[in-house]
Image (cartoon, rainbow, N blue to C red; front, side, top):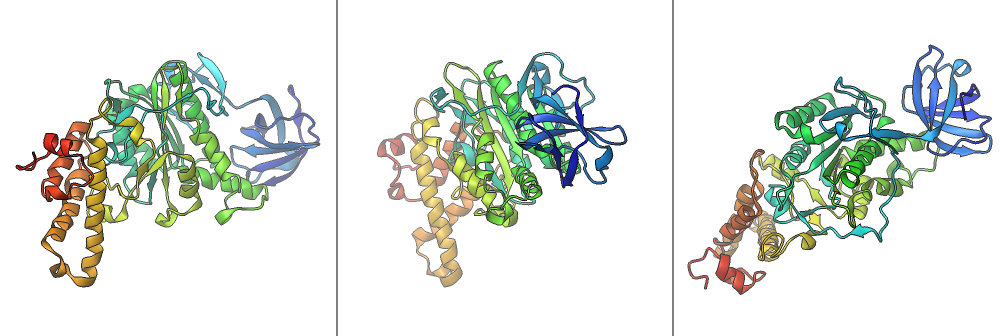
Length: 460
């Protein structure tokens, strides 16, 4: 639309500008908003119809003088310059350097909207990712190309778990991952934690960080995940790098989405969130995967804090429908001092079976996981029972399961922040736990595995 400035703003609602007299603006087109003091703010067309365009501002709109504010439509969508020079760099929520380094000028420019992977071109995820965390590797296995969110709550150590996964993740061939990290509406303490972790462990050299702080414009939270994923797609499909994308906190993203929806005066859906939130989240989550005949891949770990620890809240609820499972953190385990406080009974990896087995992890992996689930679930049931009848009413066998549940939490789930366990170590921990139960109770494990891996003296 050239260098034409429009001074026909008739209304400003929250972060939205309603500009009249526009004939050919396009959805998603960038706009330049020039304020009366000469400063400029970036915006994007959210809606366009005959004679009216709704522009979403990525900066402050309070106190805006409508008479002296003008808008120029740039005729192109939001784009980002991409290069391997982005590795080792830190950017803000608009893709501007945050580390004092130069802007990325070379490389390839790509629109940040991206597109869903053609289902026909998708390759089925099947390669085990070793995170070094037993509760994930042993019982909720992560597979290359998967999207596996972490459902957390306020004050829980999801950031530490994410940093540990980013530092330790590798596939069995020994290849590591490039990391694209997106901090959405995080506070300064969290931002400093991630910067420090990536710098001190040397992981920053193979990572790109995008950080939007809670004190910065909320509208940047809408654009940041798409900047991060466009960067990941470039590194994965153009530079053949296995990329791990970590996005935290998706709850802040959804709050920004609700803010825009309210400004547009749309009919709200559940708990005030827009009715299209499911579709919008899918445009982020579905950008993970593997493409046939491409070496690189994108594995995605979105993190969200459940308001009030409510797993039925619309954000975790819709996320669970789109993604391939979830890692759920437990408030009870956190109170007991267990780290990582992963609730294995509520957690699930729907692609686990495709990443484990004789040629990928070990032949007994599935059986060990099933038996651990069964024994731990029985132990937790007995904990609830003794609150009613007392421990004295339990049989000797029941008391073994009660002890098993405690030992499982304190030796299998619990591990150090710097502890990187191999899958063999994780499975051996499981067999050590089984040895305190009667071998006849091992109903979910094949006899051949009991003979080969069992710790019982009479395991023949």
